[in-house]
Amino acid sequence: MKETNRSSRLWLMRHAQASFGSANYDVLSERGEYQAQLLAAWLVADPDLGFAHVVAGTLRRHAQTLAPIEQVFAVAGRPLPAATLDPDWNEFDHEVIVRAWANLHADDPVLVAARTTPDRRAIHRLLAAALHAWAAGELDSAVPETWDAFGTRVARARARLDAVPRGKILVVSSGGPITRCAQAALGCDAQRTVSLNLALRNTAVSEFRNDGSEWQMHIWNMLPHLSAPAERESVTYY
Image 1 (cartoon, rainbow, N blue to C red):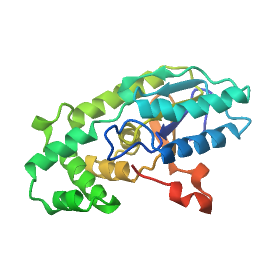
Image 2 (cartoon, rainbow, N blue to C red):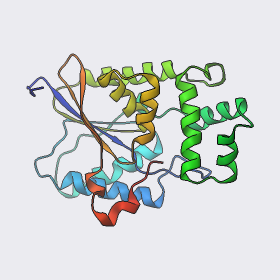
Image 3 (cartoon, one colour):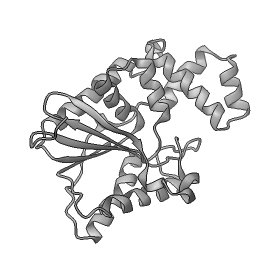
Image 4 (cartoon, rainbow, N blue to C red):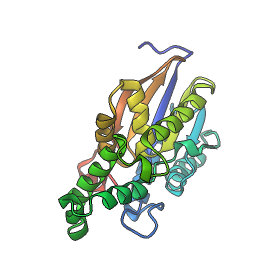
């Protein structure tokens, strides 16, 4: 699609690694802080990159990911609008969803494996099972936010961005809302959307275009700031 003065470029960035498995998930890990710093350095390195509008969810991990970006732009003397905080860009409650699924599948080998050997693969299989069940409506009576309600919430967030002046827009959010934007752009079904969600990496950059009528996805799950061989260990999914 040819970009016009009526189109917006929306850079949606997933937060850096949070503290998965700890008492407080909603705080960046040490590795997450490093990821956020590298993301900020990559953004400010482009002297022509500027944002007309900045939006972030209200979770702590969103604020901690955005803070280094604000800092490096300030040090460089580059204008960056104050962030508009929008809770509709917040993540779904994955802990509630996993517990709801676990209550229905107490003897499932996936759950047993995640409890006995909680490595990355076991946790991934558990999350996949729970999220696919949630997306299929199987947990609706056990969770405060259904898959459909979550989609409606993210649609509200997108609609608010449709109303801001055209230009480059930075959004710091989470995997779930960003993936629902991809679903809206691509028209994929719920189960495929869950698979996209599970593959989205921390601090990944995804670019969408909005011409005033629809969102189109141009870049997905990019990690230019972690592309060097020395940074391979810094790539995380959760």
